[in-house]
Length: 155
Image (cartoon, rainbow, N blue to C red; front, top):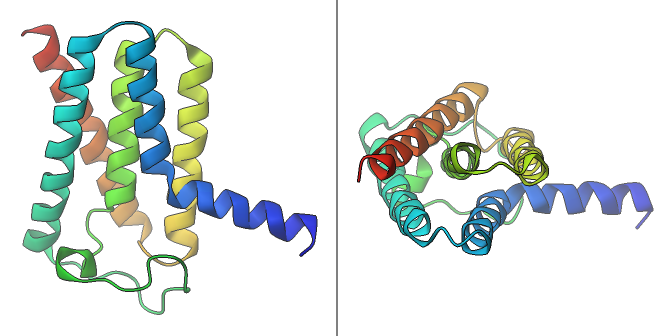
């Protein structure tokens, strides 16, 4: 395999695992700065975000794009057969949204944003989501991060 193909496959994999990576970055950052209550709210919001995505997919029932390009996640069951809203986009933007509200470290935020961009591109490239599904997932995720942060400040 040539170096270009290796880099492309590596970036695709980073994009695919973006929600996990950005969750880890935000969690470790909150631990590092000793914001334990923030971490509890962040993790609680993350699980609410997952449940919200599942319920929205079942309620909206918008299909994924036709002819997806084979990748790691080739079989879809239950709510995962639907594409609206994008769970990957929703998770990434929740994670970086929360990080945006609590972090003063622009490098960590920039790295998380870059990973999220790779995630959005990977989901579109492999035809897992339309642009609209990615945008809606992003807005929901960021909106929920704001709501959780607002609750945290008023706790």
